[in-house]
Amino acid sequence: MLRYFTSGESHGEALVAFLSGLPAGLRVDMEFVDRDLWRRQQGYGRGGRMKIETDKAHILSGVHHGSTIGSPIAILLENRDWKNWQESLPVAEGDPAKHKAVKSPRPGHADLAGALKYNFSEARYVLERASARESAARVAVGALAKLFLGELRIEVLSHVISVGAVSLVDEVPWSEIKRVSEKTEVLLSCADGSAEQRMKEEVDKVLKSGDSLGGVFEVVAHNVPPGLGTYAQWDERLDALLAAAVMSLQAVKAVEIGSGISAASAPGSKVHDEIGYQARERYTKFSRAHNHAGGIEGGVSNGEEIRVRGYLKPISTLRRPLGSVDFSTREPVKAAYERSDVCVVPAAGVAAESMVALTLARAALEKFGGDSMLETKRNFAGYLDQLKKF
Image (cartoon, rainbow, N blue to C red; front, top):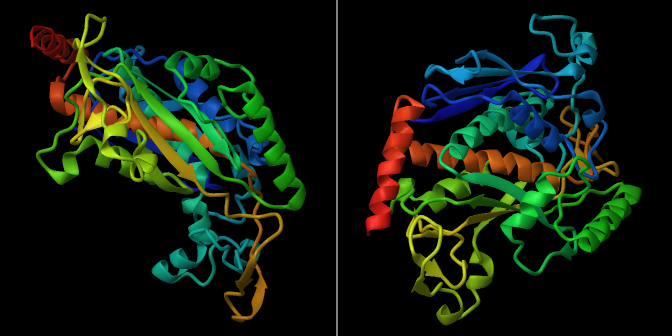
């Protein structure tokens, strides 16, 4: 089974990601991994932290001579900002007078709930782990999952659907999503240049007012074969696993598969994808006139593109803080302010790519198995042959 977890704090010495279960013999392209880390750091509306960090993956174990060896992989991401926090957040006891307390919880953040849960007198330790900085570690291991999926001809990318009140209406084809992902200068990762400019103007408005802005990103998994996931048990349904994975990202408050939200208010005749049969270079000759289901029916991939949307609330740290309460005095105050972004929708999309890739990689390994890439690809080829004969 593919398993992964992360450790580290926003202003700690480093982030560490662990990934176990990848077959031996997968070639690891470090430029690919580092480019995904770079993509996560881009986007109009990012804050000062991105001017400090230049994320590079340092693999500590599980990869030798450029390939996985079947053992657990550990990846370290250095926090360059650590040099500014060593005295404030030492591992040893240190000097309490140098501690930078978060004295009033920020509405919308984990500050208050976390302090109550762990019995902290203030929210510094909550902020450190709840921060979206943690998603960089997920992107690192997610890039490895993408490399694995690439061996099965599956690709995963994202693009921005909306920022604030500016939204795209039409579905964006894969070719355009791929074009946007290949840009060397990232604005807001929107396939429509005119809409992207209007999104930029939305960000400028909230920046001037001291506010923050949310939006919607879409992750598309291209060339996914039918048969990943199952309807046999509730916790093995692919749509449920993907929804949980994307919802786990910081600030994501809703997840949509296909046209799930608009489908709730439409008649069934306008929602369900009619089935056809035609010659085409895909896994099967069964086809769909539309993809309202987002590539998943009954918890199982159906051979169409998997499309998952994440709805991102505005960042909860505001330059113009909302009302709060002082932890010590219980008196009304303004919420604490920590250096923050204004809009992170493109970056959240890249992090969601990783979560989708990790989920699909796990589902693929559960179906095809294999301790080596040779074995996995042999099993996969056998399944494709089975589909062609259906």
